[in-house]
Length: 347
Image (cartoon, rainbow, N blue to C red):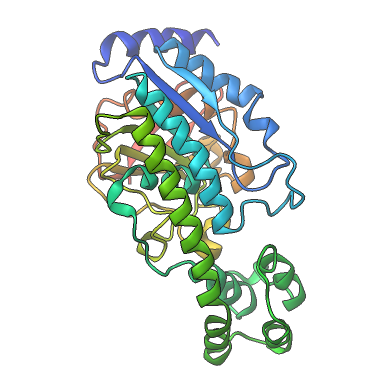
């Protein structure tokens, strides 16, 4: 792609804010069947090529075990993502110990893992809030309760049980309550919270405490004179990631650790809206970018179509430096083309 090479040379010589010694760490989303794609594919190669041309190195990191028996739903449980975040946090610290900068690219649930990894770097995050039941309750409410917004997303009680019971030890009483419910009412939600929220939260708290201690020890090992977590991650990019904001303290972005954050989302991506939001919370150093592919056809991609899309790959790590009038804290629409650089407009 000759035009890309010429464009890269131009922005490298004209953009002073590019950090030419950063390591780009890339990770995958939920499930193990797509891990190989995020290790070696034309998409990953396109990111590596453009990053290399502006002085970055790249590494792909797997946060799930490829041998996980729950292929499709591996990573669904918060404790799985916390364990994955430990792997990412160690990779971040390894690169920072070399006195280099770090850029993170997380896809789907991998974006939550990246954010969790950043939170592990901050010593002020030792204590966490009881928010883990949020995802489970939202899944049940959205997929069983009648809703005009998600008419095509209804699942039978038996189907929702098969999803939420992966790794959760639901009692017969809870399963019976869900099976017999035609809609989710306040009493059912209360029943679910009473029966599993305490045990689930306790399990996750223990997992977080273990992860936090492990990373604390690792920091001391690599940085015996002390580690400054502030703005230690230069840039975070998330693509198709679910955002729960303050409702999910472990998987929300820590802007003390992250210097700048770009969240790519699509209006046609219904995955995040099932249990959260497409967009990251407003912040002066955060930008939400609504993605269009083939914009002349007004095409907003689905979750699968834009998470790992070859049209986006070459440009991800070049944004926002390639846009002259980019302002942090704003929302934009970004259009990706096949044969020319992307275009951006403020929303």
